[in-house]
Length: 127
Image (cartoon, rainbow, N blue to C red):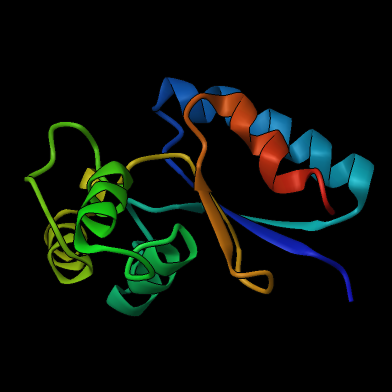
């Protein structure tokens, strides 16, 4: 089965503009499928937000660590959150509050906020 990654991005974001061609080149050279989603127009569902936060490690340790992961999933100007439920509500109310770019490997249950853009290589190194 061919590996597949999903990139949630905003083409007006400088980091996304840098990350997108890096990930496209990796997909071409390593032969994995790449789905690119402009999350402002096709936002993650609440269930997907919860999955991504879980892939990032939220809900798997102590409450303080979960709060940190949930807050880092959101932009710096987003409302403060301390739980997966609160982060889901922020994204449901305004998808633009989600940090970007985010790369998700749904099959491997891995996700990463790729800021800086070269963190993309962490998501592609084992593909």
